[in-house]
Image 1 (tube, rainbow, N blue to C red):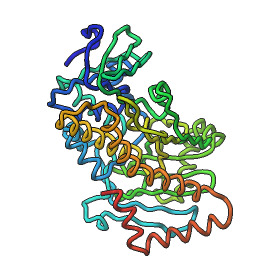
Image 2: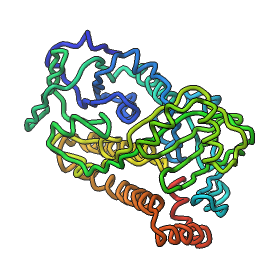
Image 3: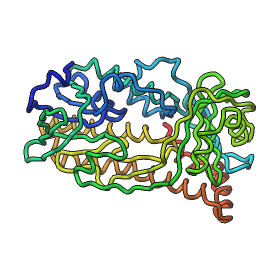
Image 4: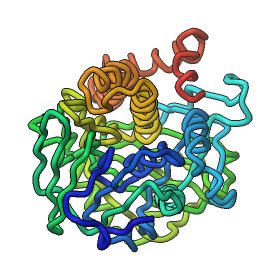
Length: 397
């Protein structure tokens, strides 16, 4: 594998990926064993990319996402000890005991999905990347400028290196600097709320059931992890976020017990609490000349449906396939015609999920009486009308 310090000026790459997060590295791994030369550029040092810190986030993976990770030869690196299964999911409105239920038997699978800590996924993606001779990781570097010409894109890095490439792929978060450099804006929604994530141990077993409680000022979710542990996600106002983050452990434990209607009995915080701002984005266009966005840089989802990384994997799978098809047909991979196929296919996949998620958020955080009545009706409607329920279940396959 090449290293940044060995790279000479004006080196040529077929693809330059900006951002060594999960989406960027996964995309690069999609070209393992090929003659496609790829550079992955990131401002972080290599040792941090290789050994990411625990960030409190648990990633729920669909069966299709696991299939993609297996195709990328990443899944085999992940220890079974780090993987837990979700067999059932229950959605509740406030203190109501009625719940919308999704069961693994309804999709004829051994489980609804899998749960893995985010830092574990990132760490094992890097393990796969470092063994690929056609991929060069350029760490501690940022893209200062990009000039797009007819036959290539010319990139100047902050370390003084200059790169020429056929295609630039931005995977540098929902607040993508590369997207901004291209003059591409995004539909952005700031909820003025925060997401608090942590791991908790509880008295009663979770039985591999995921729970989501919708309340007026906050949403509570519990994702079943190993033993009697769950990943806890609380979305709430900024004021309440400050209170929950500064609360001593004893009070915090009690607060969580009450928030989950004592479903888990006594609860105990394990490790730290982490807070993240709630902002969603949907890029107005996913491509430009010799340029494409993937992952959160394309669509930054709200965590309520746990579809963020799953959607990222679907998107990068589409782009990988389009690029490979162009190579097979001996077509320039940076041509707008090639990238346009990716844009249309991703939009068809992403738009319904993004809009549906925002609709759920609007409905289940409203305090007006009609909304409350509608919520209760929808839970019962989806539970009893099989074609409607199957639409939601299909996402998990």
